[in-house]
Image 1 (cartoon, helix red, strand yellow):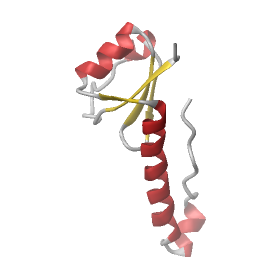
Image 2 (cartoon, rainbow, N blue to C red):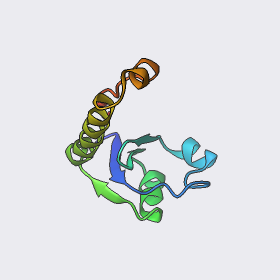
Image 3 (cartoon, rainbow, N blue to C red):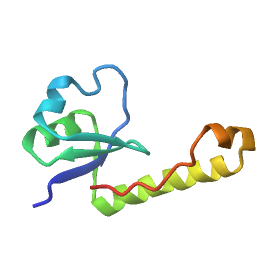
Length: 95
């Protein structure tokens, strides 16, 4: 059994997740509205309550990769002044 559930859900702002949620299960936000959630009942219920869509790890990683690639392309097209003040986005590997 996997330690994590992967899914997409649009963050609606305040109270999208609570302190109690963070105590009940692992929760990590990633680019592309991807969420890595602890694989337990409370985590699964949280994703369902947020109208989230479960993804395989490979599907979630592909979404994150596409977002990072787009951000890198955008960064590459910026001015040198911007580049000296901001780091180029780096690849993320989901747990």
